[in-house]
Length: 304
Image (cartoon, rainbow, N blue to C red):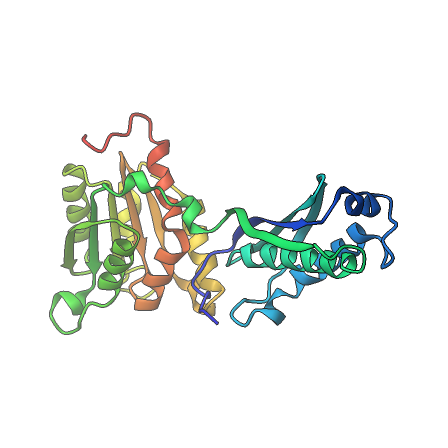
């Protein structure tokens, strides 16, 4: 199966449709009057659909087991066809569109099986996804791809040339994958004054987003939070909590990180862990949904 361990948990919704065509209005009337020999077509097929939705991963090899939290199956009967609509919801890391379509397919197939003794012209058609919602694709702000970004690597060893930077590069790579462009990339020692001067420089340049990686731990040389916090006009605890919560689900040591996020004027500053995994997970935890912040700024203008 596809690796979804990096994905965030969100409310996922999908609506699928299937059409069952019949040979005459007599078949529809028999369904409505519950006179089909094999039983109540709508209720039996509804039950089959519910089982199908919950057992999709047992039938489709690459589908993940899902904590399905809601399924609704609706029917609309016309003169010569029945329209089936299946709605599925789950709070999870991946979507439920296959579950909805699997449910609609089995509902339709159950109807076919129950109706074939009385109607030789039954056929299934138009199994399709009508709508889906949830996940990062719904929370990305495509209009913000013109934001100006800077990445600062805070590391004594990397700045001295004794160690290769991996965390900063993976941050840049992940941001570029969601359509953003990093215009500034700099490596500096983990010194309070140096960090503050560099941040101030980028703020003076009206950079929209400044991401620091490194120096958020608890060693004596980890001073990035001490450098960043005095500069912030507005701290954003919710983003800090989201980063740590996401990391804690993956390693018990995430609670030891001191990530800091906030605004200095209209520049969003994010101080993230310096480990490659910690930096990568921090980006996965809050991007691209964090870009919505820029829509909340009064009078925000990319051309400022």
